[in-house]
Image (spheres, rainbow, N blue to C red):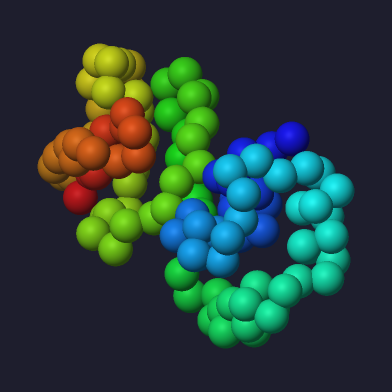
Length: 118
């Protein structure tokens, strides 16, 4: 059995869409494979409407320890130079290149800080 979240990740749909269309909190691998191979009308329509411009899910990875998390991207996220878990020291990543100014942005995923060198 897998969770609704894992199923949403694999189907590349939002959690909101999974809930809205009655996906159970846990489903079997067989049910997921059937849904993927023979999508219900709402899933087929969702796939047909995709433009590829915006990802449904992104994989965040800490540049220090490698911790990974799949999350829904936010429109307000800038381009990151580095991404670190919130418990790492700023000294754990390379210094900015000459002439660049560094800023930090909290609140990326469940525990990340984005490092932006511009």
